[in-house]
Image (cartoon, rainbow, N blue to C red):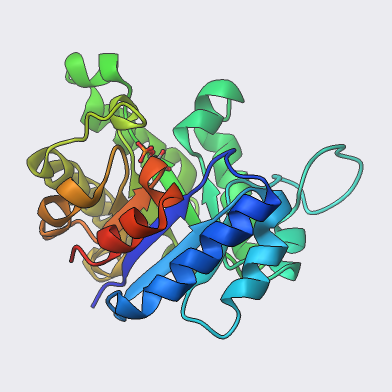
Amino acid sequence: MRKQIVAGNWKMNTNINEGVELAKMIIEKVSSANKDVELILIPPFTHISDVAKQTKGTTLKVGAQNCAEWAKGAYTGEVSASMISSIGATHVIIGHSERREFFKEDNHLLFRKINEVLNNGLIPIYCCGEKLEQRESNQYFEVVEQQIAESLFELNKVQMQQVVIAYEPVWAIGTGRNATAEQAQEMHEFIRKTIASKFGKEIADGISILYGGSCKPSNAAEIFAKPDVDGGLIGGASLVADDFIAIAQSF
Ligand code: 13P
């Protein structure tokens, strides 16, 4: 059985007080959410420690939105995977399209980051997904296949089993225009087949593949009902406790 996961990527939103308050509200409401669903809060770096203290003793997990490709040293402004692990986080988003776009992160760099994350006992949530022009020119399978192959195919099988994948079509992020459930299923199935071609069906069948891109309470149930969709990576709606919980209840 694959894990069902709903993760909230807060991006660069909330100050510390707002972030702790949001975490508290989610924790209060979480008892009404489905216990089989793993919920992960992914605030900015500055809030991880405080949010992790709030979630201690609950079923909620905490993650980071990025990490350095290096273990330590003279890299001013960077945050290492071991630092993230030391403050109570368990997951790290790697390769979000905003990192690819604004910080020019490519598949090979992301492979090195994934290694750092795994070497520190953390779980990478590896994001992939095509841009609008790539969807419109029917290159989307090719683009996602390359993202998967270049960032994940050098991992060994044990490492691969730790990875969570998030399919986030760039044209659906923050636009209000979500992929249809059919589009999501088609790509998730393709991603699973791509993983199977390298690591075997058993490993591919065990990997959680999340959908992200304008996922909200009104469309989550339809998308999550698809056989290869194992949950969501939620942006805007994760900043509203009721919406985040409603999405978590959408399986
Ligand atoms: P939205 O849910 O705001 O579209 O963002 C999705 C996303 O980028 C999650 O990582």
